Length: 400
Image 1 (cartoon, rainbow, N blue to C red):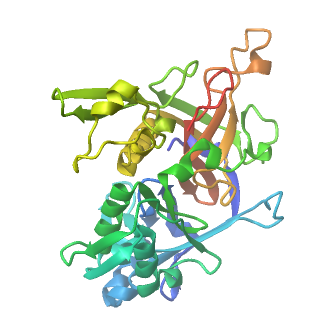
Image 2 (image 1 turned 45 degrees about the vertical axis):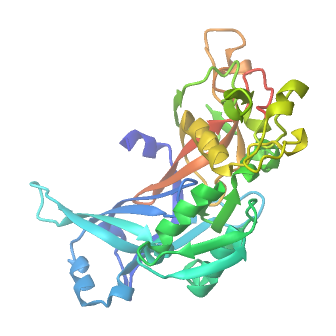
């Protein structure tokens, strides 16, 4: 991260990193980054330390279960709504330590890579169990309860497991797969996402991510450029866009359903928009007459639909990946939540009369947060966020 970005950053009341029974001195903490995203459960962190006290050697004497680091952040400015300082506290397990050589000093500088304690447990637990006639959400709840995941989260954290949409079925957790591998694989099959945010541990069905099912936009959290208030946490310091769609006509990709006609051995091809994936496929009477299922019974039009939530998830996440705008801001520890809607206003061509009024009409609009990176340099704090556009330049909302 460029140094000048931190010049426009927020300040933290507290930035504390501690080992068991030992708080790393502030002067030994160089940089820190903690990343959260909707694509996977794990929360990753990287610490850059100046190890003047050789404190990392102390890990050699710890039991494996005590080989962790706790990162604690606290905002300097209270949240306007809660009137409280935003706080993030998470326990991480060290996965790698590399020494960085500095020819100019004799200090030991290390890069420490970490993974959150919940993901570490799931990745290192192999546990075989079968389930009969249950929903996938029932299996997830059982795993979280059996392995006391709640105990690894902050005291005020929540666990929200939305009910999966597919029918009840049988599940088997194989002995040769970790719980992490099982959850991520099965979530793909069921059209679900499992992730962590500062607020807790979540599983949502892909249909929960449809725009109509997301939170309403909070206008007090609009991302703005050229804001005079240097303490405004949603001030845009830097912006980079990487999108593949034209925002003048932004839409979800279309999918194609193929249905076999056994009478003449041909295939009907029916195109559907993303938001129609779980609507009925419309056939003409002549088409319907010849369409059969595997039992030989004729389909009723009302029963013909595409029931593959894995396809919906893949379609939606690919769309998100192709329409990313990256923004750096002073940040708010708890003010940004994954999958919340946000308005973004970027200044337009200042040489035009209405450039400041209308702004950059290509970039400005409604977005959802898909990734958050908290970056700390000493006690300076910024956020690097990925947003995905969810409306057109003419302000019409994308269906879905």
